[in-house]
Image (cartoon, rainbow, N blue to C red; front, side):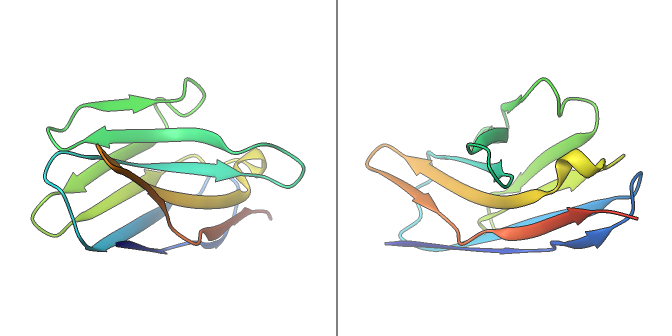
Length: 115
């Protein structure tokens, strides 16, 4: 089993920044992708960014230039630096861990962008 715990969510003003972190524990494989997805009220879950164990990244087009994903393989953590936040970024952000034989999700952390 793999356990994912997100942290760093909260309330931030438009234009502000937040850094989300996700710690993975349990049966961690070296070859895996980790990433972030989000789901706003009334909308489907969407990709934010993913990163492989080798550091290859993929971003949703709307996130590119504002968000940066990073990974620490030694600590089994993945982070998401979010800058220039907009009210439309308000959502529950979920950490994701994917390997050859499994796909795991965290419980999510709320990000609210409002003045």
